[in-house]
Image (cartoon, rainbow, N blue to C red):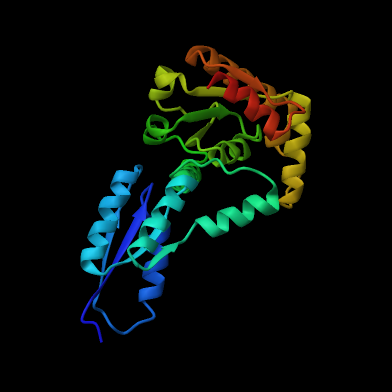
Amino acid sequence: MTDEIQVYVVSDSLGDTANSVVEAATSQFKNENIRVSKFSHVKSIRQLKNIILQATENNALIVYTLVNPELRKEFFNLGQERNIPIIDIMGPVMEKMEELLDSKPQLQPGLRHQLDQKYFKRVEAMEFTVKYDDRNDEKGIREADVVLIGVSRTSKTPLCIYLSYRGYKAANVPLVPEVDVPDLLYENPDEKIFGLTIDPLLLNEIRQERLKSLGLSPDSQYASIKRINEELEYAEKLMRKVGCPVINVTNKSIEESAEELMEYL
């Protein structure tokens, strides 16, 4: 029995895909004498030849993911000439997909890693948005990519959630005449403050429905036209003082409001 085997993980990107496969395979063996060496960002025939020479000296197994079909073929042939055990992880799958989809792959190394980065950025944005939803918090204003301000029921929260899914850290600050907003809001750092407004009659209907859903009387002051007009007037004055763009969300979908907002961004 061999005392130790060496596995070379070779990739034109980070090598995470091939490395994950190797780790999954080695976990099935009790023998711990498996040494894995990674060769990342391999882009030339010369690099491949050097790896082949090392593998020959060390009787190594090669596991690789190369996007470029020419490099892939050349590497496999080099391994075959030297009788080196060599396994192509990505090539056969990509070639079969190309056949089934009748479409050419992008042949761009590292796309999976880029997608992972976008995914984690989106998750981070969503966590941030939930944390700074409906809060008068200077830290949220300072760290956000977008800050929405408006009176209650102007779609601040759903719009923030939508923006966070697009990768923006979104915070929102409720505007209530009796509650002071953070001073930082008036500075409008990075010009990232956006105001939301709405037709008062529509807001009246929305608030009445909200009260009904909570089992409360729709005649509450919260849904009265007088109170709504006072809040909207206060919000309008504050937004003018901040000097931010104002988006009217009346009869607009979340997607429509978000697209209008992102044009500013």
